[in-house]
Length: 129
Image (cartoon, rainbow, N blue to C red; front, side):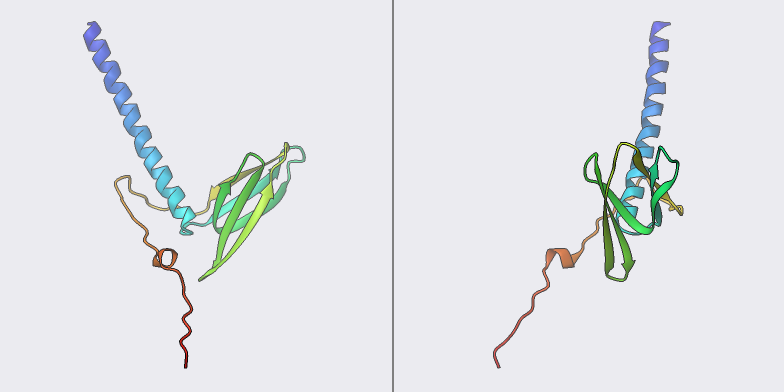
């Protein structure tokens, strides 16, 4: 009887672990897509005392909590144009990020982004006449 209960408990634990793994992979894939400027986001900075939004940033944006007190938001605004915003967080101001559109992600998908422009630098070559 104890062996059956132990086996059932282990099977339940394995099932819950498998679910969390898929959720973690999907979450990581969505974060990667957003950081590659493939998803639209709304990032809101909210004053918890007044209940008002301090700042809202929308678009193909990536955000990076640099520290407990600073957040960097980088947005793609054109083919090769980007804007970066650095914001300070205080005791009464917090932020949240909302994904504006859904994206199908596969928990088995594997992708490597190779960007030759970051590996091979842009070199200006001047030859003598």
